[in-house]
Length: 100
Image 1 (cartoon, rainbow, N blue to C red):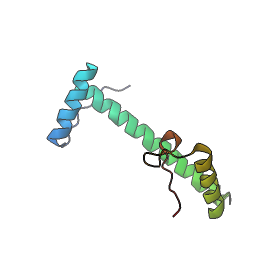
Image 2 (cartoon, rainbow, N blue to C red; image 1 turned 45 degrees about the vertical axis):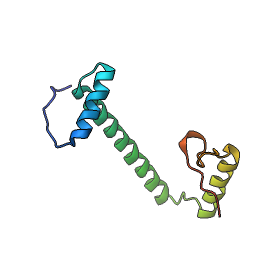
Image 3 (cartoon, rainbow, N blue to C red; image 1 turned 60 degrees about the horizontal axis):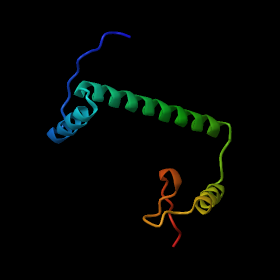
């Protein structure tokens, strides 16, 4: 790994206070939290880009799913998992949209 570089950017004072509060609770410094946040962001962006590439490749191959089939699949998931009475949340944080 190459030696770390120093960068600077503007951030709202409230966010700095939140970072400092979390850092104190974790017994870490602000730099540690920011490095973790950047690492997580980069990892998520790479994962997303890979998924987009995978979807585009499937599309080029004609491996598409009909809109009605997607709707039926989502409806079946909603029926299988049920919905949380306090806001329509299904398992794993997915929101279930009920038909009117």
